[in-house]
Length: 333
Image (cartoon, rainbow, N blue to C red):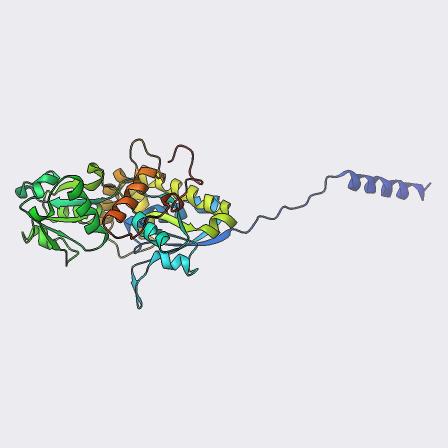
């Protein structure tokens, strides 16, 4: 009997072990590492991305994101498009005109979302100039930088039936606001979210002719990647778009906290100045009738057409290949 008892106990223990559910730990997949090349230095204009990182939205998508500051280095201006094409980053920010030009040059870049729904480019003047509408530009001196800004400005004149010869258009040689506030020019073509705010900070009451109010609209701060990334890693692309849109929503809901996030990337910034610029940006980001991150086919087509009309593109391209709405919600286009 003494021998039987241990045997019975052993059988019972074996049975219990056999009947117990197997506890196998499921390993947590490692996050996917991606780099995003910003279009400028760490400041208010990149706050959506700083906030998406700091608030955990990229992490929620299984992404570990490295934000790469732009600006200038020893080799000159850091071109976000080249950074992606060279494999230095999987994603980056640019503008719709530059991406269309890149496609025309055979570069396989594709836009996946737009941080801003309206362009911040405007004609900025002071009240004494009497410039409140495009037609008032006649007989005045307007400074505008060569390149894309001048092409957009000339398109505004064209669409508003303003003869270019009636406006004294001069090259913008300074990127400060001094020529305007010192009376050297009557108006300047610049961004309302940057120079426009700077004019207010200098104690003046600027007047704005926003290009997009007259149908001259392009996309700035466009998130893009490559055809290969979209084809081979669609879930990563979707995760980036989702996190960016959630970061944008956080910026809209709490701009002050968003600037706090930005300051963790660049402690030399002046908090109040950055907040004013971000607050001026939000109305262009959060536009009634448009979803955060969305893109409109008409804006892309307009940008393409004015590039062709201004001779910047020698041949038209299939603009539908420059962007995709695949990773946006159905109501975000």
